[in-house]
Image (cartoon, rainbow, N blue to C red; front, top):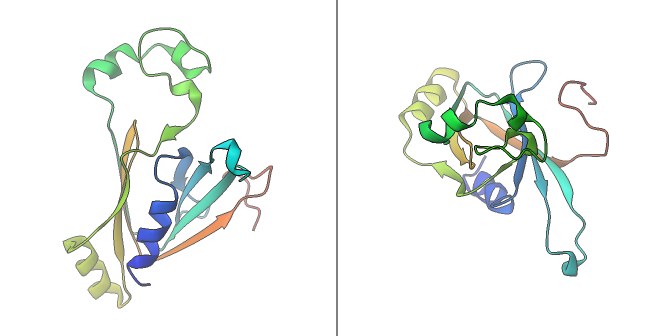
Length: 156
């Protein structure tokens, strides 16, 4: 896969909403579901896009929420939409993909995995307002999701 492929794919979801991320139910590939919207005046309908990072050999997720804000965000009332307490409201059930995603170039992890498995690997870093996700993978598939999709119920 050409490096331009994940770069273009990540550019398409800049500043959009990550509504789910995690390993697929068969635990080999890593899935990121993004809600993509545009200004209503454009006439472009919102959509959910599924990014499947195939042959994902490393997935690292770390918080971007400061310790001070985490401390204010432990109240379970913040798990519900419309929560009012001071803190990070987890209940919105999405994270803004900002500052966004980028392909990591000159990665030692990529070189190690490519050499070990004999196929090309790539590394990306996706940063939201709550998580930083780093993935090492070989291929990327992007598809539009139909209503009713659930990451916990395989529809393929």
